Image 1: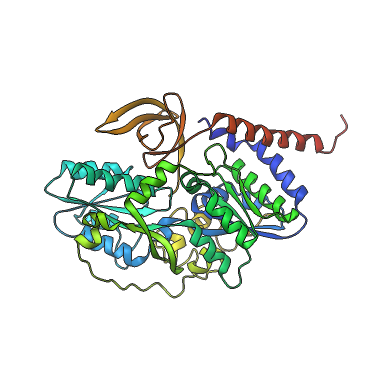
Image 2: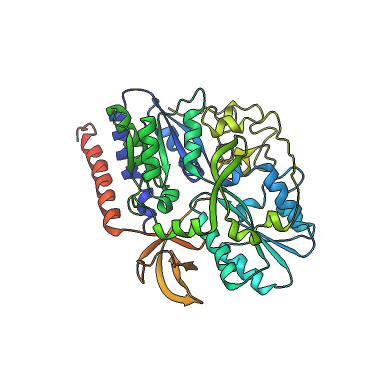
Length: 369
Length: 85
């Protein structure tokens, strides 16, 4: 496919790798922020091809992973009510709450449906006026415009039986949380390419300036990722912090202004809890007051649910770049993608799940250098 | 989760006030909302996430960055030690 295949070209990738080796003189720890990048790095083994001085740690950027257990339990409580059609992206179906997951609820008789686009959930509501249709609106800034479109569209068309269970998170506060973690080793970031397609690069320029670090907004294919690493290392070696845009074929400095306007027409910033990490101030989105009629948490009073995470799980430290999956005693034994214990194992884009899926089991060398 | 892929716009239409279209992703055709991307039209490549077009792929930018990376690759080959024939 055009704009994908050429960014998987091995010849180009080895050229960039040679250049990374040439410019690296000191050890540097970099973090890729987005779970899609983590997945691509581990799948293609890019971390194993880098010179030994460059360590990649995996960031908190997987919305499925960081959706709090309480919110997942709420989804399950709503989905099992009579008369409900519960709609969700496919990624959330297998994520276990305290007792069950959406797929198991579905096989037990709940009407749980996977949608490709949030607008499809609005269509389901229009086609089923006698039912209550709830959409599980999770995601980062990348997904926020599509979710905002669904609820504003439902409002405009008078689709009263449509509501959102919102668990939206924002990337810049998470980067700041990583940088403020005691023991932080991260010296540079690969910025989240698709989040920046929507939001632009300015928020990242401000963080880069404040913390005097390089942030290189990076795409998702192997050539993009290696180019992002090269640009970050060049800046670290030269001592020139700042923001740089590797993904300029789709990311503009201002992002997509119309999409941003759409986000703010539906959502406002709020404090959010991140699974494994805890509450990060001003790190999430909730529905605006004017759209409260479409807020599933108001419509279906499920109360406050308390959930307990397994004590053995170290996903919070992994999400902040302090530890790697192999540091966990439960990795690959008690905790697997089929029976995940915590945030970083629940989704294919979580660091633990990526390590497990692509053969980074216990006992194998972490790097093949 | 933030997966977004480039597809070619092959149809543009209106659905009750919303600018929609169809995009071809290497043979798979899906409905795409183009409302927040007025600059994208027929034949353009757009980056799509959950049925929503986020950005138009800029062919000149793509060409420019890729050429630089390719040159790096060629340079790498030139720098490889020579072997006797």
